[in-house]
Image 1 (tube, rainbow, N blue to C red):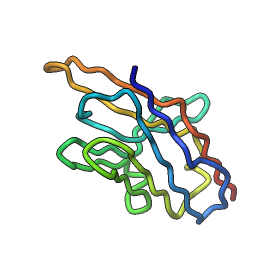
Image 2: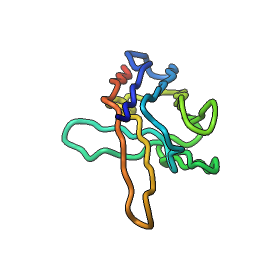
Image 3: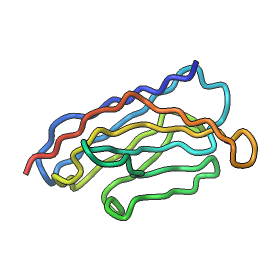
Image 4: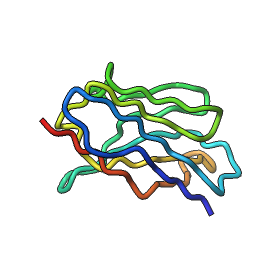
Length: 120
């Protein structure tokens, strides 16, 4: 059974930095996409940053230039370095992995989330 476990969340002042980590167990395949999403109460979960199996990076406009996604090898762990944090970055951050089965059919995996609070 696939399990994704995030760590590194916490409380930081605006302008500060945090580094999130995502470890995985039970993964016997190479994910097609891994990355980070975030969610605040009452809003939809939104993509923060993703990295494909070929190394292609994708960032939300709101975090470009401040956040960096990285991984140690082709799978896990996956990291999210967050610099110049703003109060608007406060959210629960989720690790994510997608495995494409065939065409548009895929399996998505999520961690339990880690809380990030940025104070002003």
